[in-house]
Image (tube, rainbow, N blue to C red):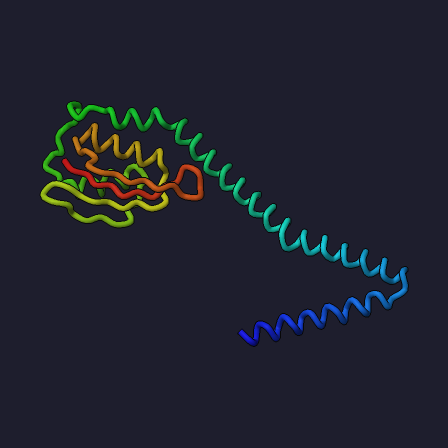
Length: 175
């Protein structure tokens, strides 16, 4: 507590000394000093307050535009997603004795989808991780699996990437 009182007293003495020095200057020098102080205050305000706020606003607007482009792309591809989700499993053909694992492997490479990782899930299921793949390509591949082989999507999680149209996904298929 005493340190704070001493600090305040010391600060008051320094301000009083500066006032004495200021008033001892010629009026012209006082005017120049006030003008210089005003100029430096404006510069400090610009670089310490205005500029960071303005840059933050610009960055937020850029993020907004990026998200708006993604939403527009998703809306444009909504019909493809609905078509895939509404496709009937009744048209599905037989697997020809192939396991779901071999179907996923063969059809993914045929459709240009690279699997990051996969693991069996239950008796007749598989969990797949896709990374940085085309959303349209993934939908077409899933449509082939469903319409041709009767493989259904039990669960899917899709995450957008910085590049428009590219996604990461985790998919659980069963069939």
